[in-house]
Length: 157
Length: 157
Length: 157
Length: 157
Image (cartoon, rainbow over all chains, first blue to last red; front, side, top):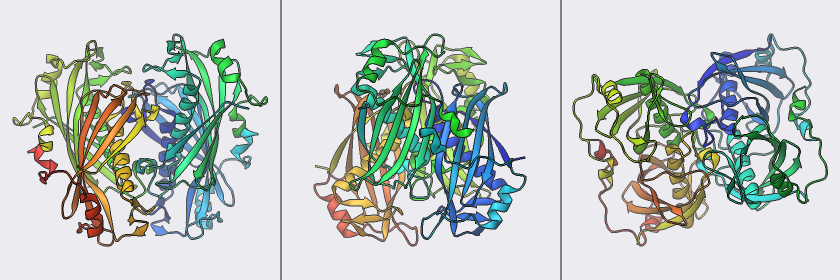
């Protein structure tokens, strides 16, 4: 099983736009909340300066979003209560891949699916860096069957 | 040539996050601004209730975002002035495909690329609907060489 | 006792800005979430078109924000868990006044105080309207000792 | 005359909420854009780490928002073009006071007024600090007639 974290989100006024539905960019913001809660469940957090903490210990690396993709199946509306399921579907040398699924509660109607990659960066050089072993092991534990590690960029070709 | 619109964006405090860079979800929000300005340049606007106006005349359809993808090549920082280039790269029966490129000014460093599809919906049934001919003709005019119309979803396979 | 609702908020990446602290406008957005949860606790909710529902029944009025004020005592940081306490401190003929207090958990350090007024509008005329009796009674129940009903605008004189 | 800066803002989808109007917290975010453009016009900018630059030279202080107040006279709607006028109405030892006025274009209907204070903080101690003379002189030049320097907090009493 992939490492998975579920969080509930109430669609706030500020999440919606004039169409009456949740705004697509806000849904992408929810993905960020999902990633952070998943990492927190493995005792990986972010310090105030953007660096990673593992068990509270500062690391020389951080994760930044390299790519994000969202597909909107049905609209979320103001005041809907939704569940965001975030999973780590791949841990490669320098990147993590997450996937996302948002369902409306309580009827579990599928609203949004998505995926993103996070790239491990050296805080010093700001270049891609190997994910430290203690991080990759935590995130691989019980990981999903191997996945294509190619770039989402393929979609653009 | 594809229909193209360039807008300048100043990276505001509210566009950034604690890492000091523009937040990925805000960049996706900029894409929305790019689409709207491109459509406006063709006299296609949105009414306050989310319906489309063509030359100011209300239409029975609207466009909603079906998919969005963004790839972050380099970070935008607070107070950067960037240029967002939005293009329509495909007009199919019921969908539009846009692509996006964000460069920093004045050095034109590439920061972000992306793509999205908008689906034409009937305002009445909220189901996918053919794009009215007067809209698709305006947006096809001078369109880009034929592009793969498959779903960005391919990226997930 | 004033009608009071407490909610917990985790400071997300999208709530922060490049200074590393929660962005002032996002804190104002939290106030909105506090109001909505307080009203929900009294079975007053918003329909998708912005109109009010009382016990699920559509009303001919809505509440819109007339004024909002926030004072920042200490910064909220990324990943802080904070508690927002929202209270109704006055119910007048056509307006509600709320106050807000945000404390950091678990140390209960005071971060933000604020206040706002919501104006009851007719959905038809978009003009200020008397608050329906069944709404004002619910919100007055156990209300706070009488407060000055003057405009926050005084602050500007 | 007070130092004044006018900027135009197009109301984007992400600025609106499900009521069809610009969301109150986004209007507060616009104030931030107004302040930054006003300061830029006096060659006072923010570095990426939140510190101030004067003529591009890093300072040991920064400005943070201490209080903000907004009053909504009439709603801004999606796609409205509005003008935000930002002025410095007081420069005291450790604080700046700004006021704001948002009018719809082209009819100049008044939509929003507001005010805020920014506090000068030492970057080192994070405590309130005297505004450096070269900054206060630039911002006082041609300043508004003396104003009440009391806290907006008075409004709450």
